[in-house]
Every structure is written in structure tokens, then in C-alpha cells.
Image 1 (cartoon, helix red, strand yellow):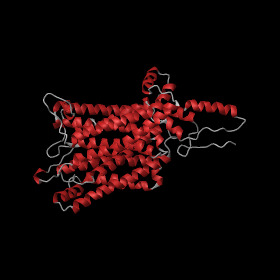
Image 2: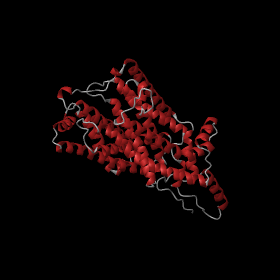
Image 3: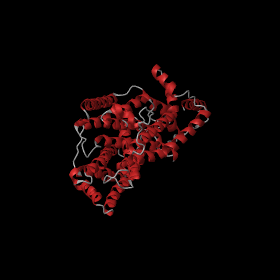
Length: 466
């Protein structure tokens, strides 16, 4: 009897042909669940557009922003989405450099998440302006009045950091898809898809020389993108650390923000991947082993983030600075105690369940935990920004802030915007890497002399599919 060799990461995937069939099927006609999700996402985008239009017509007073809380739900959500964007590059680039053999099923969705999360984050500084038609003042362009952005402002650094990150991430995302787009080009018979894939595949034929240049380019882009994970969110953290507001003083802000970004991004990847697995019938490609590996990474980053929370409290106590001590006491027991304890519970306590392998390999449990983490990370940004601004040095200036319905509608709409792009991506481009999945499968083997003719034919077929 011939021995069938199975992949460790994908034991239910037996051949290259099965990979082509299963993954290119994603580009076909989806089921009802897909259209329901897409309709909900588009409805949320409509809500965002309605609320934003109301704010533009009636003024920034439609938001709950006031003195002293000039940064509210908009900047909170901006930082949240920038954080979500980071883990896509981590999963794709860093795990690629370390040759992690379980990344193949997840990294394409993570890269797409990065691009769409940056697109979502980019909306919020413009919404926050109140007069979005003046957004170009943030850009350093020559003008007759000699007006230039204040290059010493961290907000201007954000423009450069986030736009650079988006450019590199989108390039990395597109280049990594070229062999798979070529496979889709060769398989499709739909004219508009054929034309689109022909353009995006850049004439890919799969020759040895093309593979050589492709792997080099992908490696260099991975090496370039990796430090951006650290640099971009460090810059975002300097928005706060460069100021004198109590609660924003700690030098731990940069690594604290980076760890938080990776933590939230890992959770969002699983929030996306777990339903996709069920809706598109990809059970053979997202296995408990993937959940287990991602769960371990979430657990580690959760502990780093929780350590950062405790460090902040220790530094506030050790500094013997009254406003700093008062700020952290107020965070835990003041008017916003509920936000702080939601943050601590969702980000520090609930992830401790991941010490259990049974939890890490349960799709339902992992999905629920990642939802809690997403909520907790939004509240982390809320606590840092809103609570600090509401309780600064002068007691007579203390004033609480609550988001208005306009801000909450735009926040909900941002999720619709993000999921809408992601769902459209699932239908148009290969959402799981076909070429790299074949690399972790056992190569086709010669079985026996009797079946040599049929096997040779099968090998030729596999090579063509590859």
C-alpha cells in the first residue's frame, strides 16, 4: 500500500490540485452569508456618511468635543485603527523572515487587514478637523503665502509615518499576490476578471528567473516593512509623550504602544479569519494548529501590555509628582473608572484563559476572546486620551466628555468601511496564498512501477497547477 504523506500544518490537504480548486473557489459565487455581511457593512458606511455630512453642514459642535477634551472619539479611533494595521505586517513579514511554516493560511488576510485598517485610520484626522476641505494644510507643499506645516509637531510626523507605512504595506501586499493573481488569470473565463488579473499579474509566467527575482523582492520588502512596525506606532505614541499632560509622561510609551498595536492586530486577524473559515469552507486551511499559534502570540503580547499598565502605575507612584499620581488614581477610581476597568479586564484578565490549550484550539472561544480584546483596546486608547485630557493640572478646568451620537455613528461606520473593503477583497483577489501553501505540502511522489503512467500524468498536472 502506498504511503500518503500529509502536511503537519494542513493534514486534510492532499494535493496541489486541491489547493488550486479550494482557494480559487473563493473568487466564485459566494453564499447568502457573504451578501448579508456585505449589506450590513454597506449600511454602516451609509451611517458614517450621514453622520459625517451632518457634522460638515452643522459644524464640529455635533461632536462632543469641548474644552479641555479637544481629542475625543475621533483620535481614539484613529489610534485604534493604526494599531490594528500593525499586526498584518508583523504576521506577514516577521514570520516570513523567521520561516514560520504556519503563516501561509493567515498572512494574506493579515496583509489585507493592514491596508484597509490604514485606509480607515486615515479618515479620522480628516473627520476630526471639522473642515475636511482644509486637510491639505498638513502636507508640505509649496505655496505663494509661504505657509508650511510645523515640522516640530508630532501630528505632522503622523502624516509622514502613516503614509509611508501605507505605501510599503500596499506594495508588499500587491507583490506577494503576483503568482496567485497569475493563477487566477489562467483559471478565470470572466472577461473583466481576465483583464484585471492580466494587469495585476504583470505578465507573470512562473519561470525560474521570475521566481528568483520575486523571492528576492519579497524578502527585501519584508526586511524593510519590519522596522516600520516599530517606527510608525512609536511616532503615534509621541503624539502624546511629547506633551506635558499628566498620564502621558512615561518613557515606556513607544514600546507600550507597539506591543498594544500588535496585540490588537493579532486579535482582529482572528476576528476576521474565524468567520471566513466557516463561510467559505476553508476548514482544511485554518486548523487548530493556527489557532494555537496565534493564541500563544496573543497571550504573550497581552502580558507585555498588562506589564506596561502596571509600570505606568508604579512610575506615577515613584515620581512623587502630585498631578501624575492624581491622574492614575482618578483613572482607576474616578468618573471614568468603568473605562479603565473594561480596559484591564479585556486586555489583561480575559486573555489569561489562553493559558489553556483547550481554549486556544476552540474557534468559538477564540472568537469571543478576540472580540473582548478589540473592545478593550479601543477603551485603552480612550483612557489614555480622554481621561488624561479631562483631568489635567488645573482643577477648575476639569470637565468630563462623552461621545455624541455623531461620533458613535462614525465609529460604527468605520467598522462597516473596514469590513466592506475586506469582503470585496475576498471576492476579487486570492485571499489565501496558493503558491506558499504548496511550499508546505509534501511534493508529489512516485508511488509504484505499475502506476507509473498515471503518476507521471499526475505529476505533469501538478507542475502545471503549481
